[in-house]
Image (cartoon, rainbow, N blue to C red; front, side):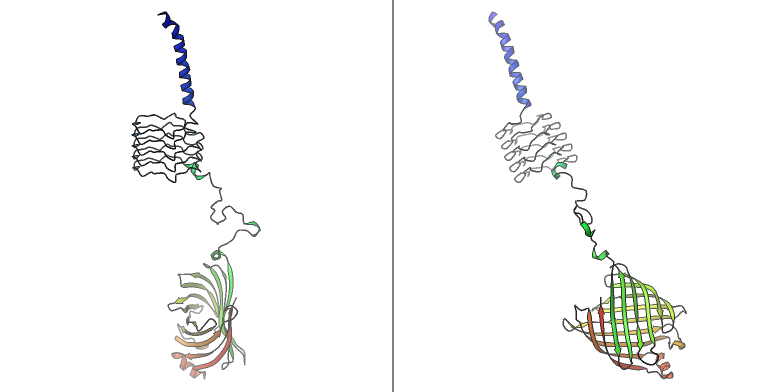
Length: 402
């Protein structure tokens, strides 16, 4: 009895020392090596809710056992885990009931290696809904990670992995104007060609008719974009002898595409031949077989309605020589004897030109032959007024655009 009494203080002191060292060991596991740790047994009831794994090595850790009921809900991995090695970790066991809902992985995990991690087991019921992975995981290696197991029931609905994006991008990193955060400098913001207002001038015909002693002209100028334009167009003829009369039909119209091959026009016009203004509407485009077609209607202030129809085709012989046949028809809605107009189709004009395109096809001199004839009642009226019913002439001229 005496010996026992003397040894009791020593046993109590020893137990206190051992208990203190155990707490110290449990508090600091930052340098622990779990490379050969075997967790293949039944760990279904293990609780990791307060575990600190900031520098642990799991490179050869075997977790192939039953971990279906493990609770990681309060597990804190917010420390520095940049050197953790999971390259050989085996998690092929049953982890279907593991709960990671409150797991905090917001620390630095940029150097973690999961390249050989085996997660082929049953993880169908694992819950990651509240898992926080907002830390730095930019350097984590999952290249050889095996996740072939059953994970059909895993819940990641509330999982925060914002840290894996490498931080928030700048506000103008993917801007709609394709700047990618780079300023435009002294030249300002660029514009797409389709939305940039441009202008152009096209002279389709500027030629001389030898037999008629007159100059024919047809020109168009425009300003706007590919979707909306203002067009100024004029066509007619000017006599080079006697009174040198000029007959022209000019229009100012709004132009807009209607479909892939057709454009619409609407505006106002003025006809010098009968000294009258009109409202104009038309359709211009490309018919099948690349036939350039135009149809324009003019409603004059006196109620007269005029319809102009035209078609043109470019038969290209080579890179420079082009044969251009064209034809035009004119019709009116009522008689106007003062201006030599009859109801119905009044006249037809046809011409064939041989052009040679130069200077990037912007300038094309031509020679050709033209033919004009009266139609319907207009033939009889011209005979009564001693005017020619049919006429033809050699022509020469130029067409250009800029």
